[in-house]
Image (cartoon, rainbow, N blue to C red; front, side):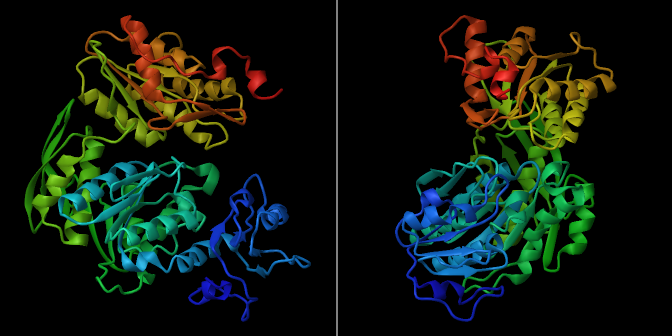
Length: 523
């Protein structure tokens, strides 16, 4: 595609004329540049792409976009006011606007968005619809499952558009796109032409990134305001906002913000679609979904009250946004066996329950522990940490939550990065003590996560539940600036195998096993 053609439908100011350059791809990392690529130089947290322009040219870049006044380059250079904001539109144009050929369902929220995205995807499949999905875990395109490699945030704008284009080429008609606050703040999904927008909840998270809850909420709210600019599509576009009636902090704000059609779900009587006759077991949930238009029984292999809300969100989006029959939507919900690292049961013959969950926010930990309480008549034992170089306020909040809701709490590592792990654990311990926690009696500090999980298992009695929270499906943990291979599920199996004296995997290595903290901090 000619460089100038990337700007035909560009919504921001741009030069009126462009040098001739044929573009064969787009990259934001100079190392990914191939001959004919457009290199988009952007300022990042740790690096500035402008410093790598020459490297991109050496690798074959056919043109460069940046925000500096530059001259003397031997390839065309286009200066734009905001390259990061521009990238999503340039990528959409390069891939011939794939979202305009798809019905796009966007899902956002602090907790539960991956689960809700998977539920909607399963409903679409149950309805016989050719659907794809892009989540923070993977991209599903027909029978192909691609690891996005990001795990915690929305893929970059040009990757999102590439996935959407692959879906169009594969003959898909619908896509479920999980979107994060980072993704919206960094304009990664601005050109995705959403038709249905769903929120799970907006609770305390990413204050380090956004500065305040209001800014965080506003970033997520961009999903709903984007519905107003979605173009009419040949297949139709409902432009429906689906919001959580029970989420007090976000509901009133979103209810006033949304200018298109909207519908809400919840557990209370005021909700448009609500759940009644809820039953909880250690193997799943059952309830009846009720609205003015239908009444349908729903069963799910997921556990916990929060997953009732996730199921309701998916059902509401499917029925009112995509016109899927309620009974078919219920079939799709029942078809989801579980989400990797989300309340995942690790059973190796022990006489207590062992669970791995992704809960890494105060609210997610709260609902995970509440779900654990409903799953057992015994004690709830929690293992969790709080990440370094991230929202510091939640360290104390998570420890407070665990002291209030768990019987025993073990504070441990969760990606300390270049911060002192001992310092993080002290902040958490302060929160635990503030709620009456007694160290070495109701809570413990065990820096090495593997040892912390082993310790929790040794504490467990018959009928108890051990929840290891915060890592879930993730495949690494960061100490200093190094990512070490780590999987909580493997760690739990290794600890159980040692406890039961049976064959099992080896405990993954972390530097906290045998190094002083000063070593991985580089001091």
